[in-house]
Amino acid sequence: MAPVKIETTPPDRLQGDGMEALLRRHGRNPHALVQILREVQAHQTWLPRDTLSLLAHELGLTLAHVEGVASFYRFFHMQPVGEYRLLLSDNITDRMLGSEALLADLCQQLRVEPGRMRADGRVSVARSSCTGLCDQGPALLVNHHHVITRLDAQRVARIAELIEARTPVAAWPAEWFEVVDNIHRADVLLGTPQAPGVALAAALARGWQALLDEVKQSNLRGRGGAGYQTGRKWELCREAPGNTPDNTHYVVCNADEGEPGTFKDRVLLSRYADSLFEGMTIAGFAIGARQGFVYLRGEYRYLLEPLQAVLQRRREANLLGAAIQGREGFDFDIDIHVGAGAYVCGEESALIESLEGKRGTPRIRPPYPVEHGYLDEPTIVNNVETYCAVTHIAVHGAAWWAGIGTPKSTGTKIHSVSGDCERPGIYEYPYGTRIGRILEDCGARDTQAVQVGGPSGVCLSAFEFGRRIAFEDVPTAGAFMVFDRSRDMFEVARNFAQFFAHESCGFCTPCRVGTALVVKRMDKLAAGQGSRHDVDVLFELDKLMHTATHCGLGGAACNPLRDTIAKFRPAYEQRLTSLYFEPAFSLDAELSIARQMTGRDDPASHLEIVE
Image 1: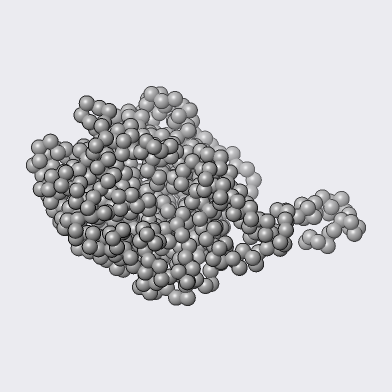
Image 2 (image 1 turned 120 degrees about the vertical axis):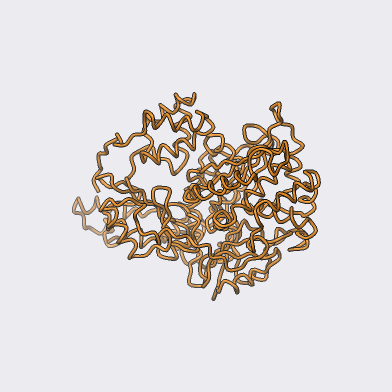
């Protein structure tokens, strides 16, 4: 396709009173930069340099800082993009459901290439990392706001028609935007919700010290993957002195579940938001905080208004705000910060950087957020499921919670099940549940592998299905992807390698370069040009990245590679053409055009080797 000259002045630039109102609503707070950029872009589709310059002036920041932030997040555009911006989820389970063929069909019907804008500026189509809808994919994100589930050929054809007719997205068929919860097994957290305020009243009745003791004795461990003891984290934060006269502390909820294959927090946010907000409020009471933030992943933007409505309802019920439930001096409220498409912001210190209006670069630790977190003040960061669990501990007590699960992994765990099974969706089990039990319940057949915890987790083969979900055996942040024996585990690992390369924040060289080198080696193997040497190089990259990267993203990037090489070696062996070194390209093929142009057909031209 020929290069297209783009008109760089959007017709509907946010300026004047509109810009002034937006800035005033955010108090011209430079820490709100990511939110301001998101709202400006939502109005005018992209972020021209003069807009960034204006924002820098109004917020008292340098243009370099604002441009640095805008260029960091994948949902921000510093070049024109289509009036309709379509992002197809590119998780491996979406591909298993045919997303690549649907992408090709969509691009053909819209006459646009993936990753580029159409000449008339009407539409652009691209791939995105997992959108958190693996149980009802293939999924599509429209204008970073609307999600379309269960994409198929009929919907693709109709989408193309609606875009050509310039039909507003809000007028597209409502059933396309339906997101179902798919809860197939409920236990403590997904059972009958507690009435709003019940857990908070129980916490207030105990007092903050007794509450902290209960959470510690329950041995509740964070559900985000690291598994640090929640009560101990809260205690450290409570004891840490703030830097302000009123000893400011913060409560942060990590709702940025970007790990491919994980979508349990989506269900908790849409159906159990009261429980989440109540757990955060209890945490605020325990550590002495007055302000909380929910960091909502950009792909869940469609949940923003419903969540804000729940917050408002809780304020009206005196479950948020001043003197909560009549307790003088207990003031606490919650704001929602929407992310902008950066997987690394799931790491707690990167999340805090983003909250502060910066690039989401992970911090060097220590110090930890419990001492120096948001705005350098003591801050706790827990995920959605952890806060929901706290509400049950507040009501039923530590002994009850500790009686569920195993001694080292108390309580229940929610799993996002997807892939080759009859009933993908949400399953909650006590810790200690066998992998095989989950496979039986979700209707998995002829399973060869399960990826537990997403690409950064562990890949289990059939002889390991007797192992159990627990911090002392198979830990998980919630993803449970099933692969039957028809799947090529090399391609699964290759998809994960592409994911990590795409999501590397680029801050440190070992991760930025290492993830790209892994993809190159995998592509070489896929092209039939691999050797045993390439597999050895992949092992070396794994060792290097585990010890040299700035944060856990680079360290985990080779986990699926290492597991699949060890457990599904034939998937790699069948791609090897030699036990020794093989070049990554064919010299004959590279020279073929030149030979044909010069008319050579003698034996030395090797034309018979290439097409």
